[in-house]
Every structure is written in structure tokens, then in C-alpha cells.
Length: 122
Image (cartoon, rainbow, N blue to C red; front, side, top):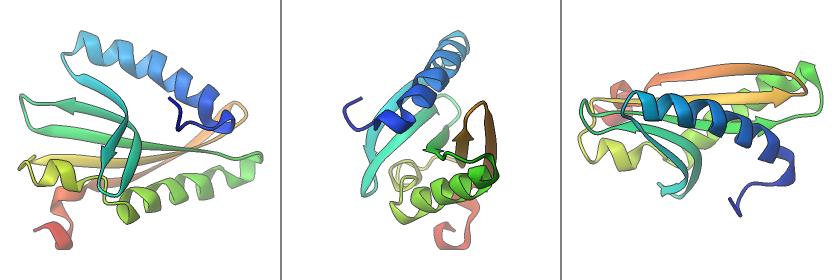
């Protein structure tokens, strides 16, 4: 995508390969850089059948010790840019937010859980 920076492009491509294939075999939609809220989320895996969606935001860092902080920054972006609003307004029952921080061959993952169940969305 034009929005991917060189820094995150490798990891984005890696995730596209894995999740795109897995989504196709399980009848999910795999979406990249879809406008949602006030920005463009990196990856969305979506199922119309059971009203479930997973929003993944990716961040790259140079140092392994900063992976967790990068994953935290990704989750903050999901909240700040309100990526879940598109699905919550469509009455999805489950909308998961996941931040992934990458450094070299390692990653850290931070889950926000089901964003539909947060106090602001009840």
C-alpha cells in the first residue's frame, strides 16, 4: 500500500502472506489499509457471518527491548483513531484490537480485547 512506510513494509508483507492465506481458507475477508474512524488501519480480518472483526496495527522498532512499547503504541493508535467505530456502528458483537511491535526477527503482541465491551461502547 502507498501508506506503508519502508520501515513497516517488510512486516506488513509477511503478515499479509500468512493472514491472507489463512483468511481465505476460513471464509474471512482480509483487508489492508481500510479507512476506518479517523485513519487507515493496517490489517482487518472480517467475518460477516458471525459479526466478528479483528483490527491489527503494526509498528516497527530497531531495538528488541522496544518491541513491547511499539505494540503499546499500536494499540493506542487503534483507540485514538477509533478504528473500531465502523464495526461497532454495524452492530458487530466482537471487534478485537491487536497491536504488534516488530524488531528484527522478534515481536510483541498487545491485545485490547473485545472493543465492543469497553465502557465507552456499551
